[in-house]
Image (cartoon, rainbow, N blue to C red):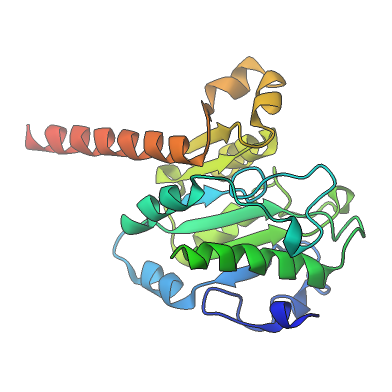
Length: 242
């Protein structure tokens, strides 16, 4: 493993998660977890909503041949301000990402972790620190419980961090993201067109379309979600005052 993969920051995983993958093939891999933020959320008097985000196609550009090294990573414009707007409101950010290149034996698990940590460092350079970052490195045929659309990753993050899933939001670029939001009980789902979203939207059934909001990018999705949350809060306050 390279020095980049070995180097730790406080936004990365504590020891054991990577080494434990072989003995726990059905669990997601925790590559980043801010322990202080997790503990603070767990002590909060009320569960917090969270912003769940896919990685490829939402935060960084998708590659049909998979991201195979850190040099392949290209940030999508506008993601930094959008994530800072969420972070400044005290809403935890959780990355939930299928990364099957390791399961397909295209790259090693160590290389998968190195790439993801590189993405976390790019976010940290913008002052963005996800509360938790989960990836599923398994092959689609492995039958794991964490590969989206299975709800393992959002449910694990919610249990560890005390998150309120019905008040949360998930932003992705695939039908599997819409499905995992529904299966995990996440309150709202957005499909962005910065990745595969436009193509995926054409394949959706009428029922699927009713459960998702199509957005140009992460910034648009975040703006719509925040505005909707404000309207809901004002409605609750108005109702309680009558």
